Length: 384
Image (cartoon, rainbow, N blue to C red; front, side, top):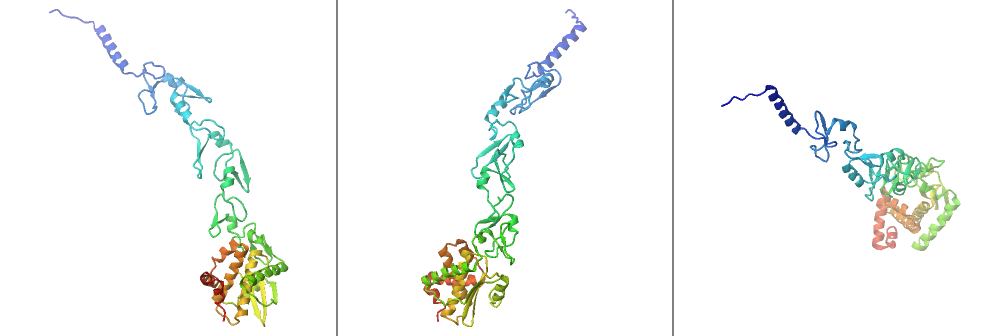
């Protein structure tokens, strides 16, 4: 058997070639330029696949980047001044466009959902930055209207609630009175109460010389002329005489009285609360009858007050000795209620149904009697 001899240099060179071939086979290719990567490289995740997106240092440093995913681009698709990869460009075409400028919306954008219609509207960062926003819904808009202290879009101008007293939009907080479905701003809610209806007088209310505050609703038809009071009394007495045969002697006096005087006269009636605000008083002395009312009462409320006091006079004309306070006040309130219904004072009728004390309990009893037996059964309650 012959002896084989090998050149040490050739063997070392051959071994190096084999080792290099093995290393070369394991090196990845740059997905942009296709060259086998020697040394460091960068890996990017694209649609959940991290294996195919390896980038050599040269391409990483010199290639354009996708505007959305920021991966170096092998092939750039230009759109609206930016470069995108094929995948992101396809997604971009599926994105909504800005409601204001019409541009397709890359990256972040504002998505507004109308709570009433559930319809979406979208706004790009530039429009969000450059356009003023509605102070009710927060959407940027080209058309904003100044309403009081607030800028409102067309939609909110139609849907926002307004303070019942001052008329300003209710943006931050409001106070609602379920009895009338009225809402008030904070400033009006903290104002004095109307001495007529008890609701907030508000910033637009009227402050009378005697310290009473009257809300805008009540001040619209306030009666300040005693001659007008007498005309209203004539209408009320005529209606009651014709409809219910309620006839009384001619009044001695029908006059205005100050709030303090009315409270003094009411103080002798121990069933009236001390903090109550009397609107009118019936007074009988020496066979003479007087009726005193507050000045500046709204015309419809004045009609109801006069009907109430007229009924006191009628009850004591028919039965001078009648002494059931609850029933008497209940009958007076029932007659007042009929007058308010006749003149269409819905607000006044609702307020009557939310009274307290003998006025409320008496009214409930008399109303029940009327529903059962008609108005004649009401008058049977006090006849001798």
